[in-house]
Structure formats: structure tokens, C-alpha cells
Amino acid sequence: MIIDSHAHCGIYDRFPPQSFEDYLASVRGSPIEGAVMFSPVMEIYDRTDPDFADSQQWREQRAASNQYLLGLQNRVIKVFPFFFIWNDFAVDQLDARHCGIKWHRHSDEPAYRYDDPACARAVSEIRRRGLPVVFEEELANTIRFVKEIAQGVNVIIPHLGILNGGYREIARNGLWDNPRVYTDTSLAPPDEIRDYIARYGSGRIMFGSDFPFGAPKREFSKVMDLPVSEAVREAIMGGNILRLIGE
Image (cartoon, rainbow, N blue to C red; front, side, top):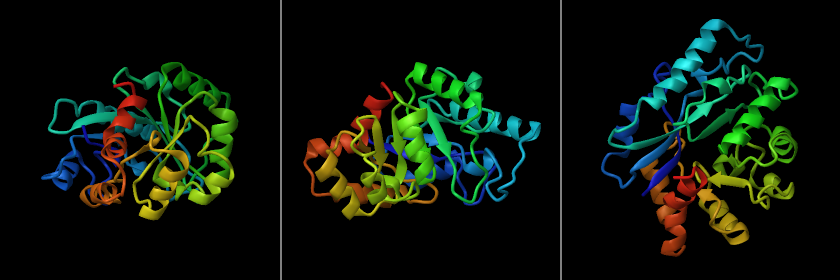
């Protein structure tokens, strides 16, 4: 089964278009059969406001956005929904159908409250459920999350670390050596993908597109063009993510 391990899909944020129907149109005619999906960032918090203050309206929008993904089952593409977490750390909304967690912030965006006891409780629940976390953050927070906050949790650093400080910086800090640290190929340059496989093997890297910011068919072709064995290609294109989420 070929699975896109990194796709955004929502109901409110329409720029760029990223509804489920938009995703289906983008993969039509390709062999992609499933997708890990999480909400668009702007459905979770206002990324344009570094002083963003949460509100009941935003909490309701987050809940609705996360819930939307749970309703996309039994469609043309098999959906593996990931719960997008924010500073209310609403793990009480986790459903047995959630396959993982999305944790996202860029350096110019409002910050996660890592020192809030609610954060520790949320990570504890994530660990108890055995859910992997797609973690996109600044380098310092990535290191802290992997080495301190989320020990025992499987962490997916997306894009081969492009937006987490860079592939080489992640390597210099020893994170790729950690057996609980995974990655995806979305938007990553082919030379870094080849380097990763040569250094760390093919068991913790997964095909992803970053739809709508990446084109699924183009990202698919990028991985298919890698000079690797069929067994390695099958692992990257679906086997690794299925194993990680326990499917």
C-alpha cells in the first residue's frame, strides 16, 4: 500500500485549497492509496500573530477541524488521521481512530507552553497510547522534545529536518541516530534523502508530499527515482508508516 505520510486537509483554511476533494484531485491517476492527514495550521491557531491569545472560538474550531478528519473514512483514499495539538493540550479529544499527533510551530509563530504541567500530562497520554508525533519546531525545541520532554515517544521530524533547523544540524545533534526518531521525504532534496538512507538505513524514513505545499505526484516520483532496492522502496512508500502506526 502506497501512503502519503504528510498531507494537510481541512474545512476552513482555503488558501491554498486543501479540502479532501482537493487532495483527491491532486493524486488522481497515481498509485497513492492512503494518506496521513492533519489539519491546516490556520485552523488550529493564528500563525500570523506571535501574541495569539486562545479563545473559546478557536478551541471550538480546533475541535471541529480535528473531528473532520475522523469523518473521512471509507473514501477512495484511506485516511490515517493525526490529531493536531495546541496549548490547551486537549488529549481528552483523542479518539481510538487517531493514528498519531501533529505538533507544529515556526520561529515567528506563537509558542507552545512546554513548561505547562498540562504539556507533560499530554505527552504522558500520547506515550500511553503509543502514538507517534509529527514534530515541526525550531531546532532547540526539537532537541529538547526528543531528548527530554518526550522520551519513549516515536517522533517524526518532517522534511528531513528542513524546518527543524536543517538536516545537517539534526545530524550534528545526534537525533537521526535515535531509534525513536523518524522522518519523511516531503520537500526534502534527493541528495539528502540518499545521504540519510546511506547513513541511517531505510527503516525510519517515509514518503510524504506536504500537500498542498508539495505536489503529491511530483513528490512520489522523486522517491520512486531513488537508486534503491525494491524492498527499500516498498518500506519508504508505505511499509514504514504502517508499522509505526500499528496497522
